[in-house]
Image 1 (tube, rainbow, N blue to C red):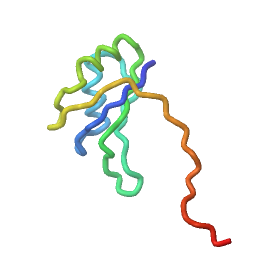
Image 2: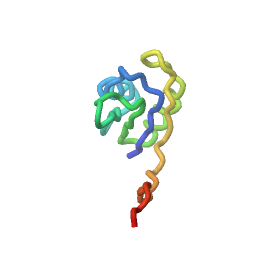
Image 3: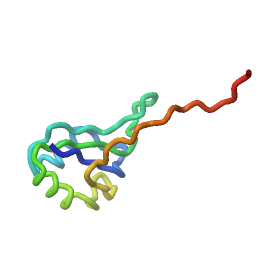
Image 4: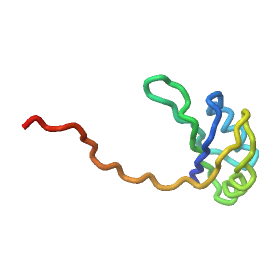
Length: 94
């Protein structure tokens, strides 16, 4: 299974749009557009998981730079999420 990053999405692009776009190239395990927690508005990127690596590579090659909903997509293999460091900030009173 290969996870694909899809960036520069229009704010109108939906999970269904991503699923339909990528299903042309093979079996889709999941497709999701990430949204802001507070507003529910698209964050402009999403992820697609494809079951077959060869099909995923074909989709990446075909869709990178393709215009969807008026935006040129940025499509590549997703990188592993880097661990977050403890935030903090602010100044201690003591």
